Image 1 (cartoon, rainbow, N blue to C red):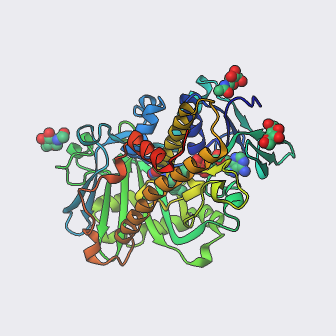
Image 2: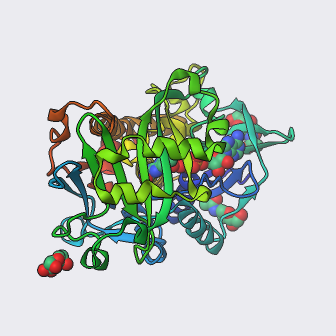
Length: 433
Ligand SMILES: Cc1cc2nc3c(=O)[nH]c(=O)nc-3n(C[C@H](O)[C@H](O)[C@H](O)COP(=O)(O)OP(=O)(O)OC[C@H]3O[C@@H](n4cnc5c(N)ncnc54)[C@H](O)[C@@H]3O)c2cc1C
Ligand SMILES: *[C@@H]1O[C@H](CO)[C@@H](O)[C@H](O)[C@H]1NC(C)=O
Ligand SMILES: *[C@@H]1O[C@H](CO)[C@@H](O)[C@H](O)[C@H]1NC(C)=O
Ligand SMILES: *[C@@H]1O[C@H](CO)[C@@H](O)[C@H](O)[C@H]1NC(C)=O
């Protein structure tokens, strides 16, 4: 290791890890990525990307490749399943209000483009290297071990290793993902199967359609279906429902996922209470993309960096799902992870730019990273609150009043001023440089 400059090791080449590598690279910070698998983990399916996350991808130079590979839209509609009335329209994106449209695309597409960009930038990614533990942390560096027994040293180590994070064990021993007693059943079907009127098919997101998409179709006390186009032309939609799951199902997800006929039955539960579009959607769901996703989340952590850990030197941090895996209902998991990655790199970049010796002291680093954690945690706490509101309306038995309780003008999750946030972070860290 060249000890005259900072070098950052990233554990995990998933969505967070690859975004962080690109963001650090943009700040002129040397970085290496270590991934346990032979390729980034792709659990399949699609992602709903909102302006806050998309703006990060734009700054990282990959949005321009993504928006041609997914469904671009501005609004999500909540529709009353009984009357067909649109109860609520939420702007998830749009050029006028947000400067960028919302996008739904396959997870593998985002991973592919992030990976292509890291190759282009010459950022080293080491596959088949599984992190096992931190060996030591000093005022200058951190040393860790891989499953093959080898060790490496860097100035900083960032755990971007997902909900089942091993790096997290060092910062929050004993914290495990919590089962939310809910699961989503997800499938992909041709849009033609919905049998929408021809005019609707031409412009799926148009508010004057009878069934505008993406849409949440809500039947009070019964539940909600979500239908969302996920290809550029909109010729394929993701369909999903949320179901309460007993504690007994915990740990049996592989078996449940393998029983596709049982999943189909879960899909069809109460489908007759919904409009024809939903009944058409669940009539036949191809096994290939039919999956069950249990909701797990990480309990709120006090510590995302080792700055506050007993004996810690602030040389280890976590972000993305490792730090705050969110329930999927608000669709902010990866969007918040991209915010984490981008602001982390900006904060570190400012610190280095401001310190004449190019290498911040331990004290400067600790204060700055802790300040970054508080800044990020405040955003994530608000998203958790939003998740609770979303769950209320999607679950069977939701009281009527909650269906329309949310403020339809809300747009705070999609708005973030990265520079202002980072300036605030640096000021509250109050580091003397
Ligand atoms: C069904 C479902 C739908 C979702 N839909 C959305 C959505 O629409 N919008 C949204 O914003 N979010 C969504 N999310 C959440 C989103 O998937 C996560 O927030 C996101 O994947 C987090 O990225 P990550 O990089 O932190 O973790 P991961 O994607 O889990 O990546 C972690 C990486 O670390 C690697 N790794 C793990 N352990 C080690 C180790 N010991 N050593 C080295 N490498 C290791 C893994 O192999 C993996 O490549 C959804 C989640 C689910 C389950
Ligand atoms: C980054 O690594 C390259 C190649 O290993 C080296 O030439 C360069 O000096 C390093 N830069 C910093 C800031 O460490
Ligand atoms: C790590 O830091 C310690 C103490 O600051 C130093 O003695 C050691 O040489 C450093 N290790 C590497 C590999 O740079
Ligand atoms: C939506 O459809 C209506 C009726 O077909 C049309 O007049 C209108 O221009 C469309 N709106 C948009 C934003 O395309």
